[in-house]
Length: 154
Image (cartoon, rainbow, N blue to C red):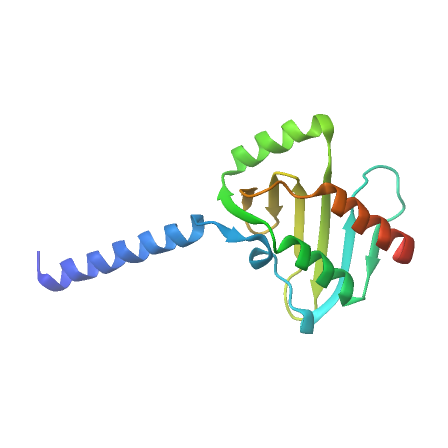
């Protein structure tokens, strides 16, 4: 094998290792949710599922709601997991279902669509993640939801 070929093979292997490491390392949840305040169009949020007239419990074009949510999510660290692990955790959560979902829309980027329980997060068109520090504070999520339902409710 020539030195050039060996060098190229080594470079490709190193790139693959770096990509895998970067993809599976622990990251901030706010870093994974696509949100650009300068490009913000709106946010839709749902905490309680059941009979309602619209897809979200409330929606808003006020970027302060998205800023507040993203500031809250910044405290959580997550690691990528398989869909199977996510599904197991999500199914376990359904017995005492406490979940929420939100969509943040932008004018020049695809929307960020997120489903979460206290322990796992799914970013649509992205991946599945497990919260590795404290579970997501669902009391805060409930208070956040009630604040905006009362202000923006559909």
